[in-house]
Length: 558
Image (cartoon, rainbow, N blue to C red; front, side, top):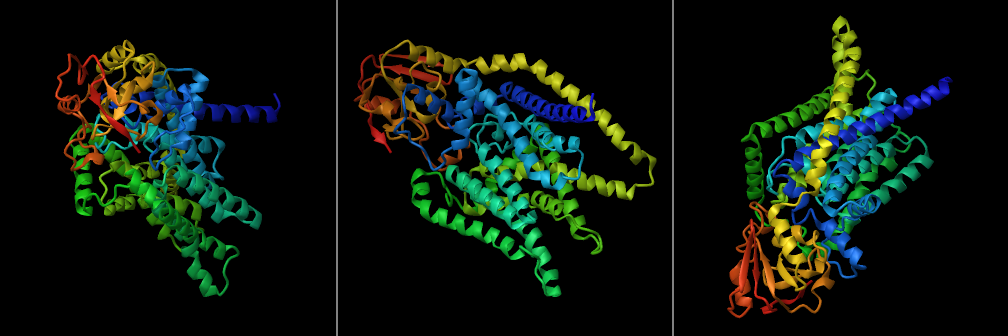
């Protein structure tokens, strides 16, 4: 076998092994989710099932009047549609597959971010730079099991389809491009990288404006390391490095674009109810966050997850401080410094609470940024340990020991994932009894029913004909929010309704609202005081049937 062929096979084997490990870790994380109450967030949450509802509406015909919010979920929709088309799985099984793919893509985006700092490393180290963040994220997911939307369990949100997973990838990719732009040594590279940066930022802002908030701190940190830090010595020498002025304009330019976008889209965002800033005072928002964090410390697994995150973050903080305090004569790797500084500064994003929002999901970058940069943090800390312990024979044996342990751990991960597959397959096709009860009842009738957002979303995407179930607002108006408005066109009365318990406890969108769900009494009033002919209890859901269309509903709310 020629050396060239051997090298290629080693390359393919390393890359394939890294991909298999990421997939296996994703399966293990999914195994945990589908085995705990957290599966409700994956399969039945009103927001999580959005893409499945869109897909069902698309199969019925072009959704020309789909009621989108300010978040368009374009990358997430494309990924879900591709997975659904390629596999032919049921909507629920596609959501499960999507969760695994989300973790794999998080690993690839993390690898793209840290790649400039690992160019001198071996190919195995570079390949594993995508596995380490996924392994850490999987470890955090294994500690999350609550069905509550506002539980503060943020790691598992990256596995869901509509909790900003693509925005997280976008942040990592944008930061990776930003680092490459500052490292570009030629004008041509700077132009190409700048064009890529503009394109990715544009798409990310177009699909979800929250990326603007998530980029403020990390982009500023990268800018300070590459521009502000070398600026003072350059001024003292009286000569600016080539391209420094151009690089200095990058972050101010991004800020200007962000400001312009916010000004142009402020009416759309406000009207959609997406930007729920200043709902409460900053103190109340911070208190809500402190309460959620306290709840995490209330269980062993929650405390372990916080401890694991703190270990990764403290390591990056120590690494950043050591690099900043290094002697002037020592050569400084600005790429490594920029990345570990991004990780160390992640908690500053808690400043989002100044806006007075109760949505804890806005804090996801506080969790995933230190994990994404962990390979660089480990490299910097490991180098410092080796430097201080160079005389120790134990340190000399560490690489061989680490290699053996990695093989054993990797094999254990793959075996565990293979063992978990049958359970994951069964859980991905099993429908909760209360929802299955309503689905069977709705599929057996040809009459149109209705229900509020929280009562019917998990039912709707599983129906043979989703148009048989109209989504209502709290005012008994056909609700066009995140639904195909064609389904309620011409529907003025319905003969049966699904009554649910309302929004889950702690739902931020309903902080302070009196009636997040529609009680049966509201439907009885809409029917002119006529009681339903029969009712059927389906667990937490209730079906009320009048036999004929007597429950009046209003036109679609836009």
